[in-house]
Image 1: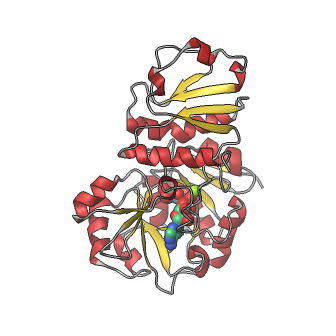
Image 2: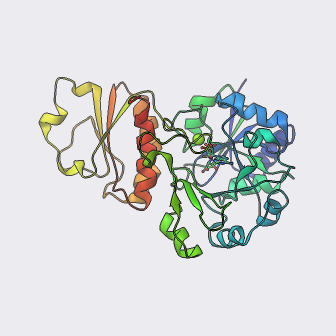
Length: 336
Ligand code: TXA
Ligand code: MG
């Protein structure tokens, strides 16, 4: 199959909408990462998502809606849903709520709950406005690989398997949405750290969140939700984690060992001592920039011939929690 990359325009929005109406999947930009979108109410369309990604059917999808009224047609509403919607939507927050029977079991891996969000990316919103159904959209990468933050990443890994990629440029946040389970009004739970911070949510709802983000739990914790896999987001090159602050502690001997050409160092900020195998995620260690560049840098370095990427962790607070979550999972592949 030939894969076409379309620049965002009115014509390409209608083209994507048309393909989605035919129950075909298309890759669309969101403000977090690119999504592989398809009709969230249609079994054939949903099945294609799993096939294209090589994703197990036990891993439920996020449904994307144009507005809160549309969400309420498909899920059980609650005051907490209203409060969080008013504060954070459209934007990078996904809520786990009770579903109604109008959502196919395939979208939710048979569970009674469903993940929903209203994205803010204008190109994605325009497509949502042009179809009558919600769009199921996991990240547009082969299952287990690094999420795509630009159209080229999608083309490289899913090219030939989908007909259309809508190119809206690099995504804003660079990591996936925060996932919050709000089914229990008295104990909302963070399932995945992301761009919307725990402290921001706590300030809005006036209570503390329970942290169930898997990679920050101890090694023996069993899987909490389908798809909360410890090993995820992995490049093919081995990832080893080095402690936060390592950018300060650089020496030429570290870079120039006999293995030099096989190891790349990726720091949170630009170190004083540079070498051709040294990279950084932000000039100044700005945490938003680190998140924005993380997957893009892993994707880029995975194309080079390094055997190992030694990646510096971020400070384990605020957005650093989301960054470190992705890093721990990227590295987990090689620790099991
Ligand atoms: O930013 C994002 O959230 C991106 C963009 C495209 O919207 N999407 C995304 O989807 O990251 P995906 O499928 O790659 O990750 C969704 C995660 C999976 O780990 C899945 O297991 C979890 O959400 N999930 C989905 N439905 C769930 C549910 N009912 N209960 C618990 N976890 C759920
Ligand atoms: Mg994903």
